[in-house]
Length: 611
Image (cartoon, rainbow, N blue to C red; front, side, top):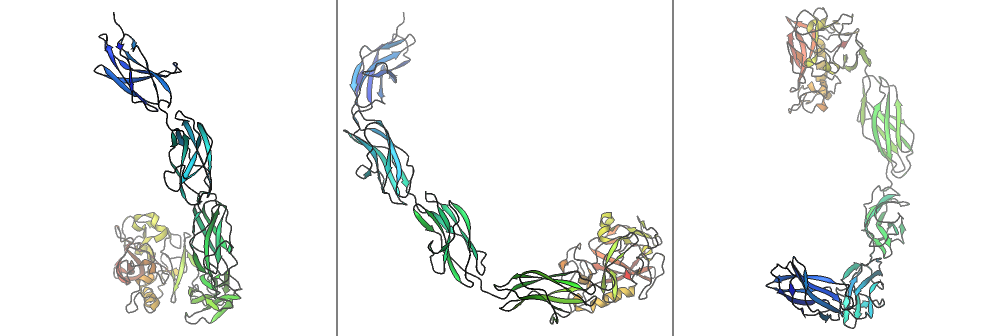
């Protein structure tokens, strides 16, 4: 038969308030492995509250430290061992009494912190076997406070309690521990630390939008100091370090940024301003800012672009941005044909804001200079000098057979189209075919760079038969060759092109370099050209081009292929030279106008001149 193991008696030693060491041995294993061994522990007066504490068997012996006992309590301890058959117990149990100790206590979290008070407390979980005769919390500004420091008394016995801590100093770090005292001594819970609430932390914003009598400031509250901010704003004075006793705003409560509007200030006066924030700990102030209100000055006025420009009239526009701190009693414009002497004037009301004046009796195709003015008690101010040019007598536009409309530009005594021709018909309605090859006899038109989408911007390229429409060569000025041009307009002769370039060359405003005759930029458009890094060439800073208003576009040319798109512009004349015809050319990398003659079958751009 098989039996449980036989276990020896228990030996107890090393008794403390909460622990005891137990030791025993296996008398007889019954030749079966022991699976488990240890001790049964229970209070002397409650054998139903049994706790099994396992031990490790080594060479027939086993021992263990039994913990989690209650102080000052009798315990019974019996050994046991288990094998596959069952459990064997020692014949006798041993009894011991744990020692008395100080109480077990924990410290609660600190709550409801104000500048001078806080709430804490503790929980006495064991009295150490002896009556707790006093409990509470103790605190100090140094770590590990004891009952010799400040303390509360919150009754006796075990259990939780709440303590009110008073007479604290604001913005101070305190250390607090719960305590419990019995006849063995005083026990302390874990230490907690807390910071009494402080005044808010606040910074002052920069002062902006400064005027004669107002300004904008504000603040940013980054911490309420642990207590609700009940008021915030800015305060200001003409003396240093203003407080809420001086002029101030109220901008609500709570933390965060805010904006304040300072009003009823005096002009030309230096002020000092600080943001403020108030909580139960007091009022904090941000950094000091200084600003000076604007002095009363002359008005600020700007000259705007002219509009509604005709041959004899224009509308001038201005804006009084600031009255300088005093009422603008008069405003208007001065104008004239010389930038140095504006001999004419017109009044346009008073006060600040936008204003306009219509001027009449102007000379066609003339540049006028003008500037706005405004007057207050301090003096008169003027806007920037601007200019405009009245329209020429050649009309606003011209329309071809297809209904395409072209702007016009007067240069000297000539009236030119301001865009490249893009008609598909002669003025008599004859259709101009799209060419797929060159021809010296048949009229053809070609899409620039072989892309029909380019026509709306660059116009068509025409061979000379198309440009002339069966007319004979002409070298006179004017050519009297209508060619492909609309009614009332004609294809310019070589002489007419020369008249244009001579006019530009003789006027410095069209010259890139007055010391040389470099007029290409004055004729070229401001866009679509290839770039060049050579001064005065068409592709160098193209935004400076087109002072003449001609606006030549780099459509390139056709000669059994498409060439120089964005690189050059070529325009036919009505003048033959042998088997060739004269033309004018602009190149992105050149500062001059090219005059040459080309094969009649080449496709070039066309510009027309009014009859």
